[in-house]
Length: 245
Image (cartoon, rainbow, N blue to C red; front, top):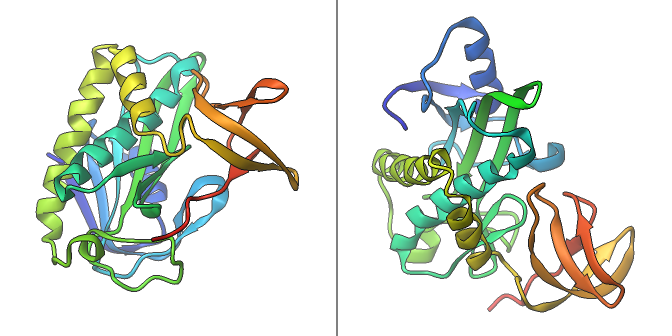
C-alpha cells in the first residue's frame, strides 16, 4: 500500500475524491489519496471529522477485496483498525479499538476510520478506507481527543508516519487475503475497548447494564444483559467511557 499516491493540497473528503477518481480511471489497489487540508471529512453516520490543516494524516486507501464475501464485510473494519493500532504500538501506550471504527489511547480518540464499499451481487467491487489520524495537532475542542504529539511530546514527520502506517495496514490486509479470519477476529477482540467489562449502555434513551462479549460476523456489537445476549448495529446503542485520568 502507498506505492501509488495521489496528493491534493485541499479537498472536501479524500473518500469522496477517491471514489470520483476511480470513476474516471483505473487506479491500482493500494493507491493512497491524501490531502493536507480536508475541509468536510466524514465519519460514521455522516458525522463530521474536523482536523487542523497540515498537522495530521487524512487519507484514503483504495482496496479491491473481490475475494471477500459481503457477509464478512466487517473484517475490513477489523483489519484497518488493527493496522492503525499496530502502527501506534510504537508509542508504547495502551491502544484499543472502540467499536465500530475508532482507535483509542487512554480513553481518548486518536484515529477515526470510515469504510465505504461498492458491492455487486454478493461480492465487493471496490472499497475505500478513509483514515484520519491525529499526529501533530495539540488543540482539540473535545477532551476525548488526543494525538501522537500529545501522547509523546514529540513532533512527527508525516511522510514517515504514512509510510509506516501503510506498512502495517498492508500486513493485516494480506492476512485477510490469506483468509486467516480467526487470527483477525482474535486480535480485534483482544483490543476491543470495554470488552468483558460491566458497563452502562444507552438505547433509545434508556440505560441498561451489560457486558461486551465481542462483535459478530455482521459487525454487530454483542452485549450480555440480564435478558440474555443482545446484538446491536452501529448507532443503535452507546456506552460510557472510563473516567479521564
